[in-house]
Length: 81
Image (cartoon, rainbow, N blue to C red; front, top):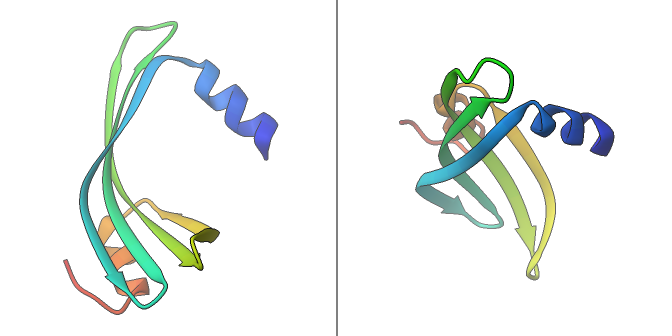
């Protein structure tokens, strides 16, 4: 998985993650994120909005799930956009 992530990131000149909103219940947090990147070869710009669902307990991250649709991340937490 780490190698896949490194290969993916290597295809871009730059990539930023901009957290827009945080919602939490108990030990789970949904973060709605906009990711901006520029492809190394073509120079084309990419803007993607998605959601991340983090499970945190006693200050440690136990898991993270990524959802291409931010609304699905909120639904996983029992919320709506």
